[in-house]
Length: 389
Image (cartoon, rainbow, N blue to C red):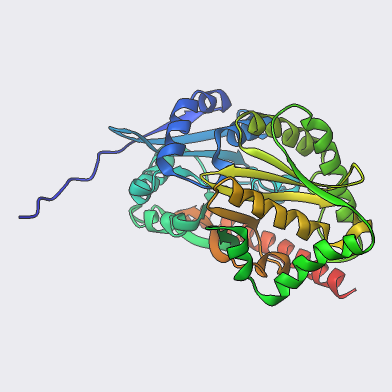
């Protein structure tokens, strides 16, 4: 005879302000272990430093608990839509702000959730926000197994809210196993040729490029200085896929410096460095979480473009990850040729807009989405024009 097991009783509470969130550190760390996440942006070091840097008092955190402890923690940043007539409406953004200058910093912004209780827990997040907070819409994200959880959770909201998929982007992940030689043998011919060039071209011109990884807090700041400078130089280069200078804002550089120190102290950070005659010519910010290496922002000297120093840094980072027993490499949010050529699989990252069921909320949300999509379309046109030029 099959005995039905009742689902656990869940209770949701709201916590207002940054200090209230920071007091949740023990619960957050325990839930990270329970969730078995490989998302480095959900480490306490990253999230708490992001909060200290950008949240202030404009924060609403929903905690969902079972008898065994927290099963979901979702911090929402309050904002007022766009500074335009009719578009200033109170709204909430999960792990925000992600607009303008901060857009590409917190790449995989999602709630911290125990997968075993994900849908009912997220349904309770929405229910609690509906009961307590004044907002027109909320914006959430979910990556990997979590894609679709929010839309399932909305089904329990009894028409009080509606959900629409705001957008989807892919994250490319490469599974590791065995040795570098085994992985290399499975790569496509064009990738193998790129790897050969990355090693043979410098040697042919008598350039001695050396790769290393900086770990730990000691000596970290000079490497970060070179990362910022090389990232800026790459952004200014008039070749290849255009990349903005994500570190141009002093507030962003200050945040990256602080969070790097905290991640390094926790053993979650490595800076992949390529040197030429003792001078750093490429640096990549790399994070580790749940046995996976995340390849974050980087920079390199454009004068060495023909020597494929970025490819060299990637290959050596993969070799080092295999040597440390990691089981995957995450090539970060977004797809381009440099990432897609590896043996990778696509993992979706979804952004969902959840709108209150009132006519006023639906109207202002539609206006807001229209303006934002028009702006994004304009950015895409400008990008394609740059590539064509």
